[in-house]
Length: 125
Image (cartoon, rainbow, N blue to C red; front, side, top):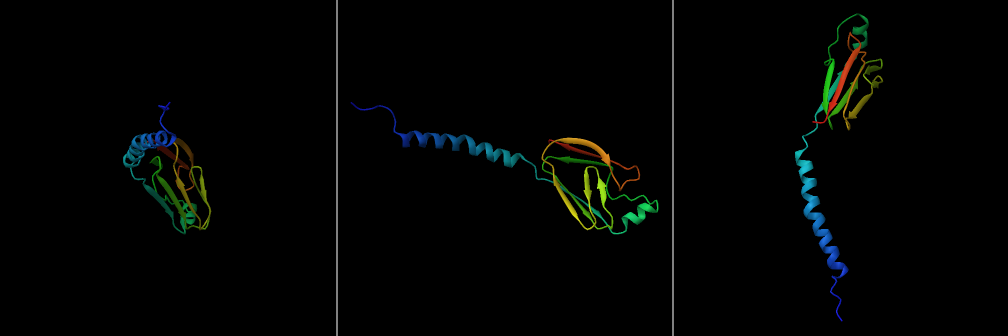
């Protein structure tokens, strides 16, 4: 008597074909639909702390920063002191690079604004 069930290689072939037919278009759609990440760079020049100590209003970037998921914040501290921008502290001569992977919104201390405050928001697109 012949067994009417398909062989294991045939079943596996159908499973692989189904995964490719469904999975590949989903992955491609996700990659194509995602906008290119933006990179926002803050460069803190040498002498910034001296200007701030003298009471100068240093406007290196806005007091409100809006990002999307996958955007990147780069802070390059060329000054002689550490600076705080929201939750990010950057030592002298250091560079911080932060890629945003989840939505968030917060207000924090900023050593580079006369009001001492910055708002950073990360949205889903």
